[in-house]
Image (cartoon, rainbow, N blue to C red; front, side, top):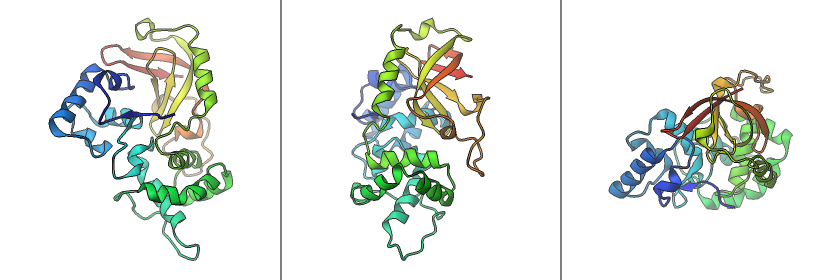
Length: 262
């Protein structure tokens, strides 16, 4: 199944259902697209009035540019993790006898679909190999669970890699449908993790719009298993499909935003 909204073809109505986007901002994105042409890359969203750094960080993982030259634009890999993805692909693509600096700057450039097709066997090999993931992650200076998510996306760009059980667990939570207007700060609720990003997790709480548990609200964080992991990486504690107990922190109905705490 495809996941993520096409930034260049999605209607205002569809865009407005993305966590962090309401009808007003979705309308601005559509108007910008109509007036200035299609988005060549997701980072161009920063040129839309109203899309500040915080909003960009929150919405970017739900948007795709399927016709972009860089195949990373087809995935849920966050732009701030493009460098990690490119450095990994670089080392997988060289001859075994070659030496490569995995910490070299790879933040500028593009990744082609041909590269991913050629490297898919290697990516598939390491995707579920915890030893290999930890080894590469140590060299790339990231958490191995962050790298696992990146590798999973690179194996199937544009596809939903969240797993079938995540959908079934989410459906179980919707047996008593709520609306955003029915939520009150302080309400305790069970949800399902729908996306894990560097700044937090998005949780399906059954109201048709995912809620954000920001990393700064994760007060009961288990210790990270990665010695140098600073700041805290949500991937070390949460996984897509995981059931979580959360508390409603704030509800902004005008902007269709829901924030959570533990």
